[in-house]
Image 1: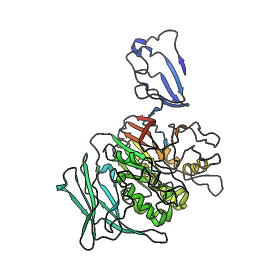
Image 2: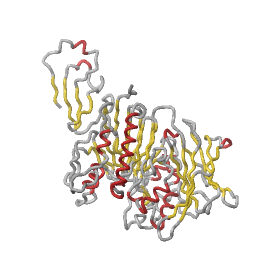
Image 3: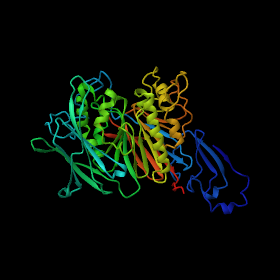
Image 4: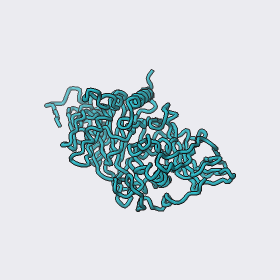
Length: 523
């Protein structure tokens, strides 16, 4: 810190006592954060002091009171948005040649065999609903439920009602129905059903169940009743953010299921990679996984994205099993890309799989949609001041699996700057230029199975395998976990929790609070 104390008080000293001092400039690693620290940071009678503080970390919160060393304040100027990136901890970790890993049979363990979801691999009746999950549209004005059956049915049913008022239930019939045939040798087939509510009341808890009428006229309902809620009347949003969840060793799953039932969280974002892999064993591992997560995805709206472990058969398991996310409302052709608004948030689910599995034409189409969506979001900043982009592949990371692991160099460069062109050197078509141009606030991803957070503003990316924590990397945690996010029009707070190996929720390992001034509608 550099502090200047004059030899004598300035002539207008007594006038300055009535003002909040702005003479303290706060930086983090040479990046300007704020000069609006408030009257509590320094007494008014010391307002004649001028100082520049450059910190390696920032153990402060609004108002300047001290807190734990892993809590950080970021101040966003409304006219100077800055990108800030987080990579999610794995909710589970499994690998090839381990039980439940890609190509491996699943086994029961303490995480998938708990009392809430221990029937995930039981035998289902042909017309019995299974694999139930729910998603929402903007501000939960509508909800869409999707479920599966083992045989074609005459009529799928979706019945919902305000909590404790089942006598006034509304029943939706038919909806969108199709057969999903896995591309494996057995051509395993399930029948999928997607049904949408009528317009919903705000600030309301709904209960629901799904059922079928088979071709003999028999009605069959699912075993359990589930719940979801619509947006409250206040300006606060709370959601769960996680990624990378397998059928086996799903360490975070028991805690996530319990949180889903509390109605404290409006939805769950999921940054890709499920089941490891859904296409295994002719798609039956996908069936088992979807039944395992039913108690989670049926009780809190699933607003997830696709990962590389969903890539089999042109992502057919992702495209079919999660057809109820709001891609049609987002003017895209399938669920690889979509966006939605929730109070002060605009959240974009963008598939970075295009850079590793897509054609140049697919990359161009995705980027055109991405820019059009960002333009509209930027115009609506007075309504949704925070823009979050969710994807699977990191654009920034330092988590190396071995000394020879270069994936945090080449793969992140492809996402960030685009594929290498014909000259073998120049990159173009990455997502970072658009995110910076349109002031994206947060890039939220998965894939690396570690939690990592950057400083805001992103000191120019200069990562090498010999510097595991470059200047832009603020914090990293190697372990199981998930994040809870709280948003208001002027605050965005991420709190990352560890999950213990016994499945219980552990300590807070990182916490960040970003603030910005209220944004007014432009004339």
